[in-house]
Amino acid sequence: MAPTYKIAVIQLHPKPMQIEFNYSKAARFIRDAAAKGAQLAVLPEYHLTNWVPDDHQASDIYSQWEIYLNKYRALAKEQNICIVPGTIIERHEDSETKEQQLLNVAYFIDNKGEILGRYQKKNLWHPERPYLTSSTHEPHEVIETPIGPVGLLICWDLAFPEAFRELILAGAKIIIIPTFWTLSDCSPYGLSVNPRSEALFLESTIASRTFENTCAVVFVNAGGRVGSSKSNYAGLSRVAVPFLGALGDATKDSSEEGMSVVDLDMRHVEEAEANYRVRADLAREDWHYVYSRREEIGRTKL
Image 1 (tube, rainbow, N blue to C red):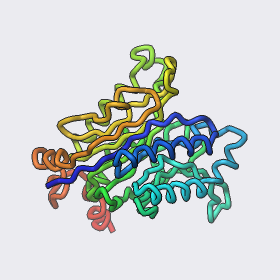
Image 2 (image 1 turned 180 degrees about the vertical axis):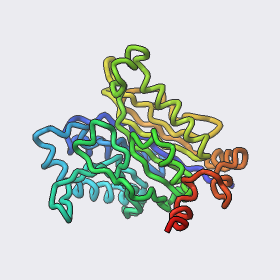
Image 3 (image 1 turned 90 degrees about the vertical axis):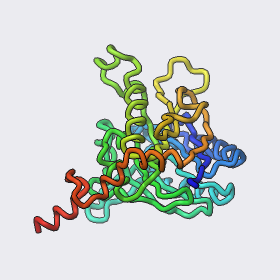
Image 4 (image 1 turned 30 degrees about the vertical axis):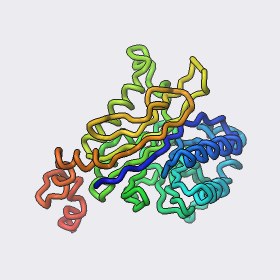
């Protein structure tokens, strides 16, 4: 019988550069999730700082990344819950050039406080590129976790089916995507045609990814202040599975801060694969798409 996992998606509203305030609020949500029996809690991208890289405090705050990573490790152990603490911007010095670099990193922390895996954002959104360093050609890696094989992606990675395929080929069954995606990320033309174009992008793309990869998608976005009617935050945090689509009544149709605790029945994933046989096709030695045979083709060219 396929297992069922209880997952908390925490649609946090991050105050710009209020790192301790945001951490304390996130910790309260995580404690509430643990009390509700959640096995995993996931936070949004940039949940500690919001996205204000030109702020005069940025350099100092981004240097504190390890302090807050260790706080989440301690909290995971204390509450007996796995945590993906959204993303944390890390300031590092390049070992060769000695230049300062900013990395946007997601971690999977287990319920004993151990780091099981990390992922540095690969596909940077255009306004991020002057500030952040991409993981470029590093492979997408699957993490073995208490809830099964997991892949981590971040925000704009959602737009690239190749990222999902690489993880699915490696055995991932749950893809977790911390995100900071707003309605105003659309162009003026797009907004003039449809003010909720970005919401349409998210809802349709997440549904497509879960069907075309026979996987579950845990999508956790930032939210706006509760009661704010003029927010540009998209929200829409959800767990998506084949056949059913979006789960998470408190957040999946909302742009406000909040939390949904979702029962993820992995039978939906197994039955989808039995029906669509996507993974089976990808595993075939004679499969015709290049991305599934990259290593083989590389060896042939040598």
